[in-house]
Structures are given as C-alpha cells and as structure tokens.
Amino acid sequence: MTLSETYLDYRNLPDFFYSDVQALREPDYQIWYSNSELAGDLNLPKSWIGSEAGLKVLSGQETLSGDKPLAMAYAAHQFGHWAGLLGDGRASLVGDIADISGIRKELHLKGSGQTPYSRRGDGKATLGSTLREYIVSESMHALGVPTTRALSIVTTGETIIRNGAEPAAILCRSAKSHIRVGTFQLAAASQDSAHLKALADFTIDRLFPSAPTSGPERYLHLLREAIEGQVNLVSKWMGYGFIHGVMNTDNALISGETIDYGPCAFMDAFHPGKVFSSIDRNGRYAWNRQPEIANWNMLQLARSLLPLFSEFEESSAQMAEQELEQFSPKFVKAFNGVMARKLGLATGALKNPEVLETTFQAMMTSKVDFTLFFRRLTQIAEGHRPEEFISLFETRSAGKGWLEYWKGLIEKSEISTEDRIAMMRSANPIYIARNHRVEEAITAANNGDMEVFKRLLGAVTAPFTERDDLAEFENPPNPDEIVNQTFCGT
Ligand code: AMP
Ligand code: MG
Image 1 (tube, rainbow, N blue to C red):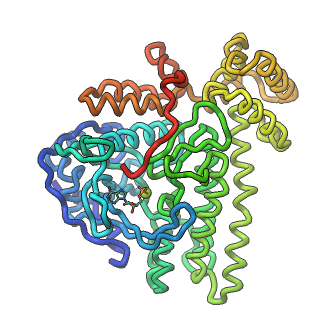
Image 2 (cartoon, rainbow, N blue to C red):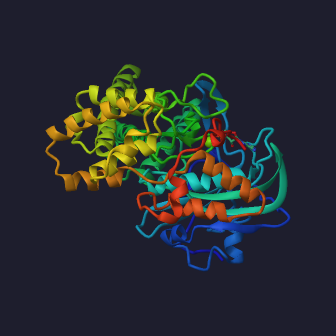
Image 3 (cartoon, rainbow, N blue to C red):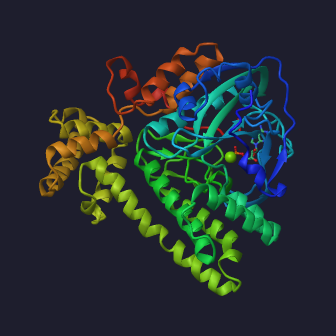
C-alpha cells in the first residue's frame, strides 16, 4: 500500500545529505509491540500497523511513499572532539506524513541494517535497546517533554552478539525532523555554500515557517529558534532529573526534540554531578552540565551558519554572539519556571538563587530520591502529614529543617492552596521510567515475557495519575537493584 498523500520531503535536499539504503531481508519480521495511539495521531489507518504493507515499512523494506529508504548524512563532535562524517549507520528514513494536526512527521528506523555510513558496525540493534528507547521516549512524551516518539518494535528473528547473544529488533520512531546540529556541521565542512543554504532553507520551511523569507534575519531566526528549543528541552529534562548521557552534536535536533535514548536515565538519589553513561568518564554530560553543553552545541550550530548571516566574517560573528548570549539568561528563566512549579512557588520566588541552592544542597546531602522528593512535597501541599517526606532524609532534623524553610517560602507566596496543589500535581510525576525497572523489563523481554514491559509502559505513560495496582513503580531501587551505568550503541 502506498499512501498517496505522502512523500519523502528529505529527498528534496541535495543528495550530498543522504544515501539510498539497500533494504535487508531478515528471516522473520514480526511486530513485537506497536503504539496504536501514536499511529492514530500520525493519520495512519487503524489496520495499517498490523498489515503486510505496514510491516514492510516498519522493517525498512519500503517507505510510505514508495521511494527508496535513505540514510541521513551528518557529522559531529563526540564528547567535544571533532569526528567528521558519521551519518545514520543503523537507521533509515521510511516515511514522512502529516499528523492529525497537519504537522509533518518523519518515520525513522533504528536497527534496520547497514548503510553507507555503517563503518564497521553491523547496523543492528538489540531488542533491549529498542525497548529502552520505547519506554523512555514514551515516558518523556507523557511528561510533556518534546521527544521523538516510538511507533513500533519489530523483531527480526535474528540473534546478535552484544553482551552475549540477544534478539535483534527494529524501532520505528517519529519526529518533526531528524536534522541535527551535526547536519549543519557537515554542510559547513563541505565549504559549498549552496549546500549550507539549501539545508537552512529546507529546515526553516519545515520547522520555522514564520521566519522572514530572506536576509540575515531568516537564518538568525533559525539559530534563535534552535536555541529556544534547547533551552526549553534541557530545562524540562533537568526538572525530571533526566540525564541524556550523550549530548554529542549528532544527537542535538534543530527541532528541540529529545533524540537518542542510549545511555540515558532518570536519576534516583540526587547528585548534581550524576552521570550514567559507561563511556562518559569525565562527566561531560552530567545532570548539571547539560545547559552548558547544550549552549556549546548551539555555538557549533552558530559557527556552521556564519556564512549565511553576512558576507563579512566579523559582522556574522557579532550577530551570532548576540543570539548565543541569550542562552544563559533564557535558560535560567526557563529552569526557574520549571522548578517553581515543582516547589509550588511563583517563578519570581526563585530570582533569589538561594532557594534552589538550599534545596539542591539538602537533597544532595541526604541523597534524596529526586522524584519522590517532589511527589511527597506535593502530598504535603495536599494536606498529608510530613512524616513520609521527612523520612526521605538522612536525619529527621535535615528533613524538618528544609521543610520549615519551604513553609516560610509558601507563607510569603500569593498562590492559593488550590492553585498550588494543581500546579505541583501537574509538575511532579508519580511514575518515571526508573532504570532498574527498565532493566527488569528488558530482562523479561529477552526471556520472552512481555508483561513487565506492558505494566511499566502503562505506569509511565500516565505519570501523574496514582494507581494502587502500580505502586511498585513509584519507589526507587533497593540497594541491590541499583543500576549505575547504562550503555549506548547497543
Ligand atoms: P549514537 O551513539 O547512537 O548516536 O551513534 C553514533 C554513530 O555510530 C552514528 O553514526 C550511528 O549510526 C553509529 N552506530 C551506532 N551503532 C551502530 C551499529 N550497530 N552499526 C552501525 N553504526 C552504528
Ligand atoms: Mg545518535
């Protein structure tokens, strides 16, 4: 089946930006899980996912439009070092469709086999890694964080070797656009101004159509919007204790959506310098360094765009700097907004940096669980007794001390109790995709049991609604359940 109204917009870019992909044929493609709600949002007919035509697209044999699948080309800085051309080594673009709001969404596969950019990689993904991405990205979506979304997992019938033999699978994810900072870096590195301009115009038309139609303002608008997107994104990540883990420039989308759920995790016990990724030895992508790194990624974008701002290097650089200078103040404002809602305060109350400093210090000293801290604080606002909150701290006096401090802030606040409760309930989730639960779901899935995955998914996709039958997902890991590292590229 070819859906007649779809076409692969990406093919309108110069072919410098992609390569055709020769589809693999694996022994046994089967839909392992699919997201009928997202399929509906994407305007895909109800029966499509389960159909033969659906399976052909979701396994990378065909595209929605009948074009050949393609792999995107991009370059990157990885862990701060220039890596040159990378490109989709195990991914392919198989669709581009208007969703029910009329917004174009790309369908992109991960684990669909080798491409011209695979280098020594096998182009494949484990079922475990696709399952991790499925759960965490859908969790992020339910929390209101911009993200790629998971449409399906298809198993291929193959076993691949990673940490032992594991089933292989293909994830299909949707995003407004998969164009990255690294795509612009590739265009800039080609030193062909036609490539750069084509990419910028394509991106603006797709993502920021309200930009001026010509002149430097058009391209400054692109930079500004990308900065806004990163500010919004990273402030939300941090408000949920989320650590992306691999903020390389190929994993920074211009659309401001989260991409690449490799070594990511929501932290349990709070520490601002928390790192999960097994390969992040210097803590470059720690929780509290994410704004600085997003800012650095935006600097790389700005550098790539310089020739489009002005023909004079100096004035280009000045224009870029003016935009980049906005990052920090914009971030502080956004993050204060996020944290104020979590604490039940007006944003203005966080203008005094002491409030967050005192709070994070108290949380860190007692290694308080990030999510439970705010959840139980919400319950106090609702009128519960403070005991459960206080018991999160190492000592009663530490818990009581911070709580008195908070009560002092609340007394000065003009927000009504009713508004405070509503605000805190919608900012402080009960269920997040805790790492030990994700690992548990992966282990069960590898043993042929899907139920653990389904229950966890049920909890994290309605994260603000308490359910007695899901109580186990609220709690942090016991000491023997703690997962300290996550791995990427699997
Ligand atoms: P990531 O760490 O997932 O952002 O990937 C970084 C680069 O490595 C990208 O170019 C990927 O396409 C590539 N890559 C990761 N895993 C594989 C694999 N199994 N086969 C081929 N390429 C891969
Ligand atoms: Mg990536």
